[in-house]
Image (cartoon, rainbow, N blue to C red):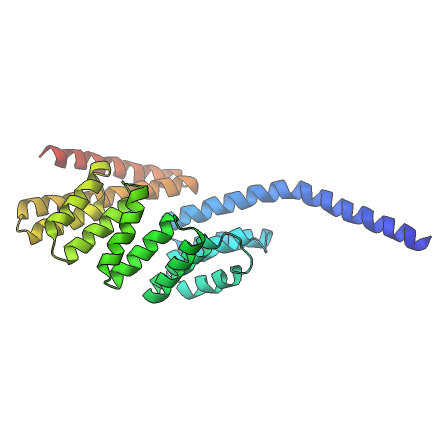
Length: 273
């Protein structure tokens, strides 16, 4: 009889804990969401230490979260702490079902470490799980380009462009390959394709300037480089404004938006010259 009563009490205790966890979980969910938003904002500002701290605080609330651990690994990739990222990702290998994303991120970490063959291997492992995964295809193409296997890199980028003809990074990487091969007119054609839908892409404008320079088209080269520098400033201030707003620093955000607006006017003025 005593054992029966104790079992009932134990069941009631477990039920109470479950109910209590249910009440707390909504509050915890909100905290987790806020911490993740702050982490993303700090990443935009390039403050990876604070981003890391926010995710670690979230992990205190939910220590076994695969999602949060993966987010922490991604922050380590952005902050170039590739070995720390790999430590987490390797441990997640036996726990996650979505292996294509995991292997792609492991490949990114190896790419950052300069281990290009390993990066290529993990991009292939990711594609074995999901052959149409664009991010893994792009990692494969980029790894092949760095390994100077230009023909295979172009084939890989073309697979992406068959899915998305306006895939900016694939067009840009193909343009860089053609530039490396001395095919400057072909590289300009690819850069111009990007600029048709992203006319203020600073990186592409700078690359376009270099290709014009190689063709002794100095006026076009100068114009492209000038635009790239103006756009770069504008993007920095705009991204900073968004991030500061999310973090609640509204006065600083306003200053960033003002600078963004000033840079936008400068770009419009350059377009009229």
